Image 1 (spheres, helix red, strand yellow):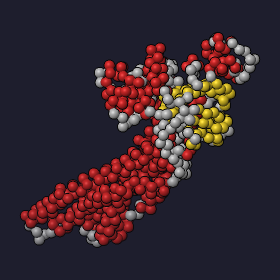
Image 2: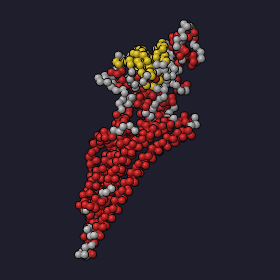
Image 3: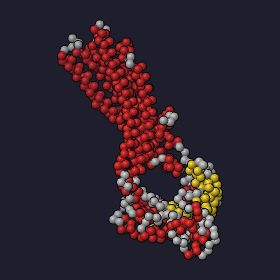
Image 4: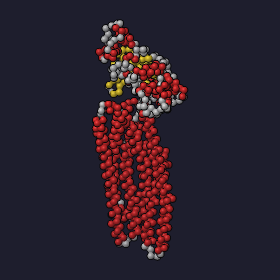
Length: 605
């Protein structure tokens, strides 16, 4: 477990609780009343035993009248005072807890959304969800239970101690003989519970990430008949979590057992000592009975403190994990004085760009090129050559390590991130849709667009016809990740979304791959419309799709090794020539027209 920051994290969490301190006060007041009002019962019982039942001067009718008076009055207090304030205690404790963690969850979610791409490379989606859901729920217990019960129990213990010490000092000291032992185990076991709770929550996040990954890839599991091996994998991870959880349960159970036995032994000591006092007529039977009745509300808060100790430990471990995320700074942020890019022509320049995901393992090295407004440039090369990384630098998903990237002469690092990304559209190989209607997914590109604009975008993307044939039209639910639609339908909706965004710079990551011929043709037509008057970067794995671009950049091991038009690169007989030959198994006529004897980097493929 990493070095704990609990004091600071606890105080920071109180910052989320502070706006609802009024609810905490109401809950604490209601709790105090809930536990203080019953403290009148032992005193009333003592008076009934010594002053009514054992009073020879009272008649039977008089005794009955006093019993009815005392008990009736006490019942009225419980009904009209105690019950409403008990409701107040639980309702406002719940409201304070839920409102506090609502604000914390929103801040955490917003921080996650603002994280750079490297954050999502390090953390599985299920692990992030675990912090947003499971850890936040544990933090809620700190408000709903711990912060309100502490005041309630502290008030109850204080009042009871005052009462019993006024009743009999020595008998009170006997009742408190177990306190030092109790406090020792309270502190010792609390540290153990806190440490083990942190590990449980960490392993829960790991398991959540693994399960989320497997569920999203369920088709692959079925295709390779890996259900049994995945079951074994899940069993192994679950058993590890079970072992960690049982370690926490062990310390919590030990904590409860020790506090329980200590609070059960103390009344026996009081009975032994108090019984001797009754025998010696130093106190009355009513006093001993009343004193014994006060021990239960004295020790119940002590036992509850043991429970609160575990709750506090669990909650603080959760807060540590929550604030780990809140303390992590996005790598890509607006620099001081960053400008708002109001309009874009689309001129893009890479100047000696270097980038790496890991130290001393460059993915791009010395990449330089320029693209004029409206030009189409294709990025080709073997897998791992840096194509996807290059286009990821355009919207500043990552920042360059050296060199610079500029749009219309503005270094990307001098532009506000939100302003920059507003002018860049992306159509990816794996179309991403969100649960909801077709309308909501298209309008994701521009929520302010009207109905006519949305329809026009869907027509331009060749999506209108299939959407209009659906029973609910644009209100049709697409399902999780758009699973209710075909691949071609999903891709056309992402293109419609891009039309609505109307960016000046466009990134296409092989959007027609893995589609049937009809869908591919429809999407190609839509993309041709989308690319008009836009600077376009096309990541191409199939070289047949890049023959009509303005120029091609051929990447190998993070460097541009060739550039030019399709026919020119074929005649150069370099890496592009080699890749083309590998894909098609033959050379087009234009490649045979001239043999300059240039092997180039063909051997590198």
